[in-house]
Length: 88
Image (cartoon, rainbow, N blue to C red; front, side, top):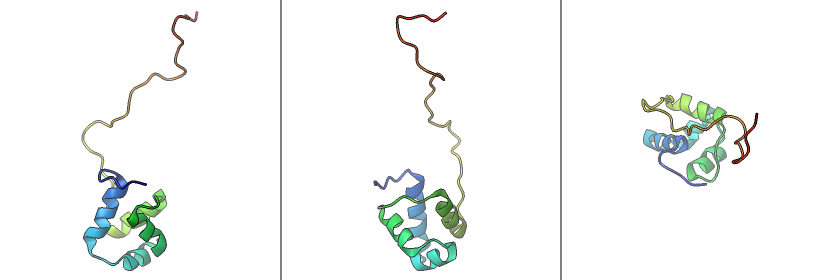
């Protein structure tokens, strides 16, 4: 697992470190196990959204969408057509 700065997980890790609060206190307040939090902080495991929600609630974080358009590639729905054959 890589720890990329621009990911939601990377932002959460930085927010936890920025608090200066011990991980054991964050674990107790959020209900997230200390081992789970420790492995997440090391980048050896990913966490579930419910765990992320619990940590965000304790840290008073919220998800905010960028003003820019999402980077979702546009592709046609359904199966791609084979070249050379025309359906009628």
